[in-house]
Length: 118
Image (cartoon, rainbow, N blue to C red; front, side, top):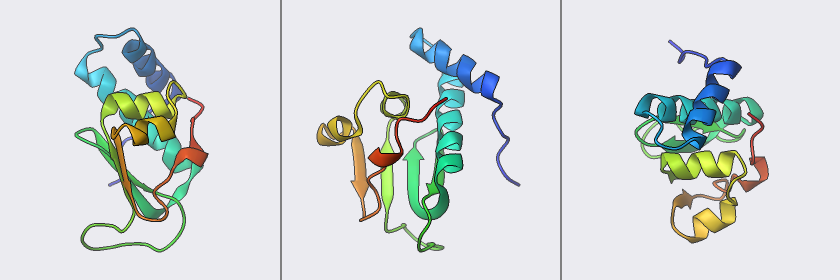
């Protein structure tokens, strides 16, 4: 069963709550999942796994599909960093250089897809 689609209004409301700071965990989870959903819409595929624990993980970008074990192209970050880079508040390269984004694999640089337009 595919994950429940987050409506635009709900996603934007969650992002506004996170921007106001001290957002409840549910708002942070919705904001992260909404931005992951937008990333999937912008770059569908199965060659890169984008992880934002504990809130979600998606596969994006066309290319070779992996089916077992650790994928060859993995990006992982925390919720605050994901929200910042996905909305353009922070640059991907700066976050990666500071170690808040870990990216492995030749396709793991997602900077050309960001920022998303929520």
